[in-house]
Image (cartoon, rainbow, N blue to C red; front, side, top):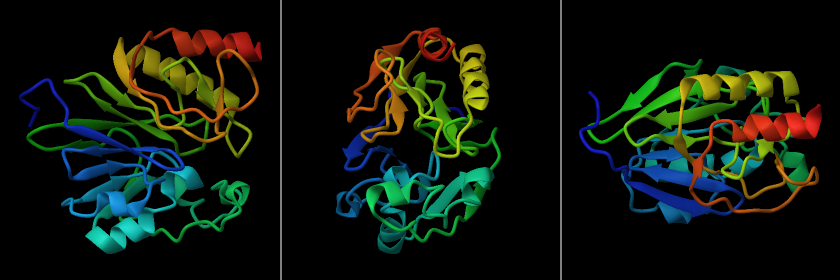
Amino acid sequence: MKPNNNKLDVQRFSRYGNAYLIDGTVLIDAGIDPREIAGYDLELIILTHCHFDHTCAASEIIEMTGAKIAIHEEDAKLLDDDYATASALFGERAPEISPDILLYGGEIFESDNFMLEVIHTPGHTPGGICLYESETRSLFSGDTVFPDGGIGRCDLGGNLSDLIRSIELLQRSIRKCCIRGISMSPMRTSPRRSDRHWHTHENSHYNESLSLYYMHKLYK
């Protein structure tokens, strides 16, 4: 069933990284204070990838709400690895997470009010995903791309060639959209400088050529 309106009920929470609560029932990423989710009828947590700043509160939120958890199969294999999850960078052990749903790309999560398409976008991690809501043209991009044209770093088990292909896929698939930038952590490459920054990215309109332009500018 396709949503019958052009507004998406989204709430943003931030701690290690941004997380987005859709329609009060679906949480995208879990790098937050779990108490912020108390009182919501949460049904599902979708992890855009396996890194600690996107997963750290997942177990507590599941215990609080009984929500199921979904992640791409390639990143599911890495969830118990302190280094592949970047948990060691935060001085932590990998969170204990047992996925209920393995994603492969192409899945649709929908209700009367939204329809989220899973797009497999490896590069930052092998199993990184983006989630696209076509009615509102909203892209929840994890650490694949950012609203200012930045891209996810590839030196924590990622692959630059894969990331280039993933962004090319987004360019072909999505013309213009509103990117919901996720990262507040040193997991990105700035479009202006190659060092790492701590930034919160608010929603902004996305030019479909911007990230690929900066990628070539940084890495040619």
